[in-house]
Length: 226
Ligand code: ACO
Ligand code: ZN
Image (cartoon, rainbow, N blue to C red; front, side, top):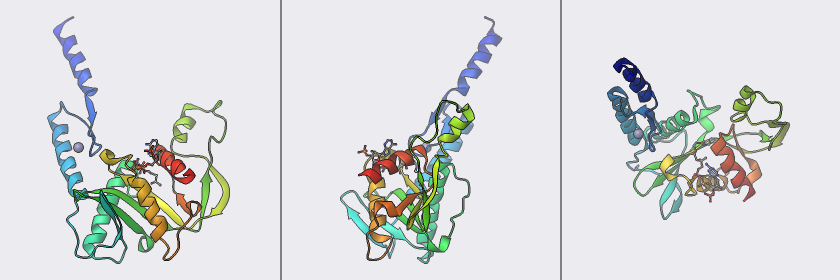
């Protein structure tokens, strides 16, 4: 092998040196100074976004040994609304939503799970809805699907065409990647059912998850059957 060949091979390998940061989720190449810099900046911004300094007025709707859930409403003080927005954007970023506006910002309720280290490690955005379409389990045959259909299927789950009554739509649910599988998502939905409509507990059927991701679908399926 000549030395130029070797150079080309090395350059190619660098492309594969991509790492995913376990906390902020950014994919970057640790070998590249430029990438490294970009990641450090993004990482810091991420940590700033989930940092919770404590507010003069907090609407605490649940308390646990490892944290609490705070509800933020659209008419709350600006600092609270701004924080809720900031965390929602982090979640949107991870969910691959790009600047998706809320269907009715004046009616959305944002639930934030704050842990004992003063970090917002969970976020749930709930909206009033009137109807929902049930996601169908294994709908359609998988024999004749094209690769494109298959890829689409990961996101676009087939839904029933028959509308069912629902009251609360979970438009987004997100838990900090390092804190998953600790029932934070479950506790967020439980609290929504308890507090979304004053004075009544919503059934699991009255809650609908909109456009779930694969994670979201696994979670929602598990939540609804238990
Ligand atoms: N794979 C398999 N089962 C899962 C998964 C998963 N990734 N996540 C949750 N479950 C099931 C499990 O049965 C789990 O119980 P177990 O841990 O005892 O087995 C049960 O759901 C409850 O899980 P929680 O611990 O309460 O859920 P968590 O706090 O981890 O939050 C969430 C789940 C919100 C989906 C989280 O994984 C996440 O933020 N993912 C990235 C963002 C995302 O995809 N959000 C959903 C978008 S859909 C929407 O917003 C409507
Ligand atoms: Zn990072």
